[in-house]
Amino acid sequence: MKENVKEISARVRVLREIEEISSETLAKELGFDPAEYNAWESGEKDFPVGALVEIASRFKVDLSELISGVASKLKTCCVTRAGQAPEVSRRPMYGYWNLAYNFHRKKAEPFLVEASSETENKPINLNTHPGQEFNYVLEGRLLISIGGLDIELGPGDCVYYDSGEPHGMKALGGKAARFLAFVF
Image (tube, rainbow, N blue to C red):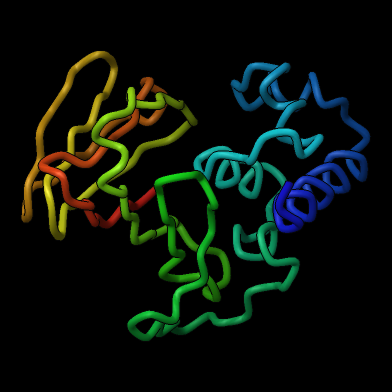
């Protein structure tokens, strides 16, 4: 188990315990399956990015603070130089980089996401989280499934959707796909 996964799980557990609510109550409140939530909080499984966004919002902390343990400070602007965004999720075959990691009280979480070419031969892993999401493809081809609808996207294509619908994606064409994802 990666140490960072355990650290994030511990921070989430502390926030929940400070408010004196059970894991089942929090899971129900945020619309998560309680067993799945308990696997995340125990560190057995990694939290999906969308779930972390919801948890951060629920406890009124910035996502970057929940992930890194360091409070965001910038209030006017946050410049993230090429290649300098911190990686947020360690899901196999997917990379997520937080593009506004140090901006305080964001209205949305912007990520650069890369789906590896290896995802093409795997089933799409669906997840849900409250809110909405916007994806804009930068390079490669992407198959995205939203609420049972499969959509192929290429460079310059985008989709905005209700992230409460089961959704997931994978690269197509034997190459990685890179896209911008904004989680609201």
